[in-house]
Length: 210
Image 1: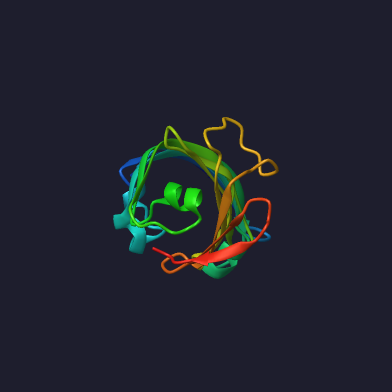
Image 2 (image 1 turned 90 degrees about the horizontal axis):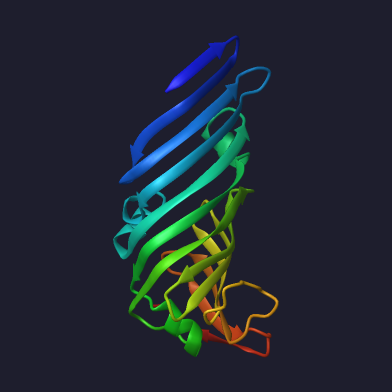
């Protein structure tokens, strides 16, 4: 790491660390007057999803590797204010992802929740942060024969509002031309409410969560 502190401003670059089984490289700029403000960029490589501290209660159900980049800005004093003002955007690429307990592909295809295991060879998409929410923009999960597309948000209290659909192997994601069924996931991630409806909005039905 290289850094410079001049007056009430800090600049640090070439920051490197081992994190969650992978590597993180980044840079940080901070100023402390008249109001603390922070600007950070980071690149992640080979992070293990099962070791992420964000959702420890779900860690045993996930496996796979993630790489990507993120740019974050915030300002304020104290954890509450810093998190409240946190904004950012980034992208993620996924490899060999497995989610145990719920077969997402079968659930989307049949409009009813299926226990089982979801496996995706690769995936990726863009995301942003604002108003204490992580916003997903066409996150694609490619299982080979079926591509799952996820849009929506998860807030810092781990409450979700997600739409999940199958792209049926299409290479270009488009919410407007989605066919088949949508799964709507809402509520706390450890016990969400899952409902199913036709993609064109021709009716809906509740389904049991796995």
